[in-house]
Each structure stands twice: as structure tokens, then as C-alpha cells.
Image (cartoon, rainbow, N blue to C red; front, top):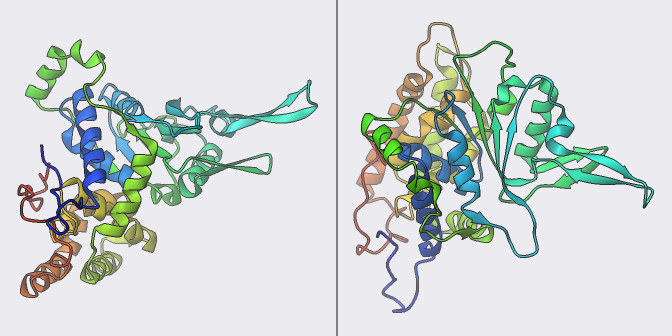
Amino acid sequence: MESYPQSPEPAQAIHPLASPYETAQILRRRLRAAVKGRDEVIDLIITALFADGHVLLEDYPGSGKTTLAKALGESVTDAEGQHIAPFRRVQFTPDLLPSDVSGVSIFDVSTSRFEFRPGPIFAHVLLADEINRTSPKVQSAMLEAMAEKQVTVDNHTYPLDDFFFVIATQNPRDLAGTYPLPVAQLDRFLFKINMDYIAREAEIDVLATRKVRRGAPAERLVTRDEVVAARQAMEDHVTVDPRVHTCLVDAARNLRAHKKVLQGLSTRSLVLMIPALQAVALLNGRDYVSSQDIEYLAPFVFSHRLVVAPGAGDTKTVVLECLKGPLEILTRSTMAAVAPMVQPQQVPPALPPQPQQGNGQAW
């Protein structure tokens, strides 16, 4: 199995990313055992989890989203002394109220006080199913939770756990009775992933392993603290060269000036892109961000944040078109300078070579 090797100096020192990398691999194996044919989606979800972001899936019923979200929630154990549900699912409907999600204060006759009863949002992993079917009032409550990791009920603010992670879904083909997500809420999702039918061989594997996948996975659980610690280690030890910042800003400016783009990228999207790049580098066994990471993640991070003119076509094509120039400059500069972002903290050469990501098939 791939892992970060021991650093030669000192002999017994362990690479600071060894434990976060192993945590990511455990989650990857558990989720791949539970859901077949969704390897790329699984890696993107782990990337978003480690980057402390949220994911919006556009899919169809029966695509495995509930199984995937539940497997992720059940792969994580709670911290000692805490009692937070690992996984909750909320089916969003037009008559849903904010209190149905966040919780409600109930008067306790025995104490003559109002007692807060937490709603399903108090969980490690929340599956917000068909999030675009609920009213703007409920979506506003979700926006506060996703942006600030807190909920406000009766003028009292209750914090959510640091682990809090939302997987939201919407069906793009069934628009009857839906409320389009506000741009501000779309901007809170790190990734928007369009899911399609899985490959023939994977679908056969789903049928053949239906009984086996009901049993407990062989992999151990990871703790909530391991995931939170991995986020900090990733931030501290995965190097992002300043030229990566320049590339992202130049790409954003190209998008804002593009004749087919009516509303460009926010600065927040560029800020959120940095931990996402660090997470995908970690998942691939590197402690530095490469140009291939940017090319791979940009469509998932940027496309849903753009408002394009009618007839502009696929937003992914527009994103890659505007990214091409800055990415070429970044690639040439890092190659010419032997990439100082790689030299100081490069993982020792004993690490097996990682697959290239430039063709969009990194996983």
C-alpha cells in the first residue's frame, strides 16, 4: 500500500503528513468498498472533507448518494465525551420549516424553562436531499450552518462541530416545484459534481457484491479528531507556491472579462481553492501543489459559481479556456526554476510515483 516513507534524518522521524495520508486512504478504501463505480466522486468528496468544504451533487434517484454519505458518516467515530450523530439525512420538501432542520426550543414544565432540542443538522455528515425543493427561508438557515458552522434559534446561537460536512443533492431533470439555489448559497459549496450512470462492469459488480457490501468493512474507523488534525497538518505542510496564487487570480480575471460570462468568480472561491488543492495533493501522496492539481479541480470549484450568457455552452469549457494561459505560464516558470515549491519539502524518492492528473483522469 502507498504511504509516506520515513524521513532519513533523523532515522526514526516520521513524515508529518504520514498520519493524514493514512487517514485519507482508510476513508477511501471504506467508501470504495461500500459504493462501486464512483471512485472519482469518492476522491472528490474526501478532498472536500479534508479541505473543510461542502459538496453539491447533481444526480438522479438511485445513484448511490445516500449509501455514499452514510458510509462516510459511519466511517468516523465521535470524539470522547461528545455525542453527535455520525450521519443524518433530511428530505427537503416545500413545506419544510427551518426548525425541522436546526431544532426547536420546547418548554419543560418540570423546570419551567425552554430547552433546546437539536435538529438533524447536528451531525458529522448531513445529507441534504433535493435541497432545491425547499423554501428560501430553510435555505437561509442552511447557509448560516454551512458558512459559519452555527445555527441560530430564538436569538440563541448554537455551534456545530468542526467536522460538520454537508452533501447536498439536486435533480437537474425534475424542475417542477423547485426553488433555484441563491448564488450566495452556491458559492458556499466547494464542489459541484455532475454524476452520471456508472460503467457496465461497475454496475455488474454492484449486483454481484450486494450481500458482501452489507457487512462491516474490514478497515478500522477513523476518529473525528484524526480528520480535524489532518486538516491542520495539510495546511501546515503542503506547500503552495506564490505563483499558484498568481495563476488563480489571473484565471479569475480572465473569467470576469470573458464576453460570455455575466458574473465571474468571487474572491471567496479563490480562497477555498487553496485547501482543496492541498487536499488533492495529499490524497496523491505529495506535499506540494502542482499545476495538474489546478487543471483538475478548477471545473469542479469554478463552474457552478459562474453566470454565463444564454448560448454560451458548457461552463467547464469556458473555465478551461480562461485557465489555459495562466496555467501555461505557471508550468513554464516552475519547470525553468526547478520549482522551489518542490525542493524544500519534497517527499523522499522512496514514495512510489503518483499518477498524472493533467488528462482529467487522475484517479
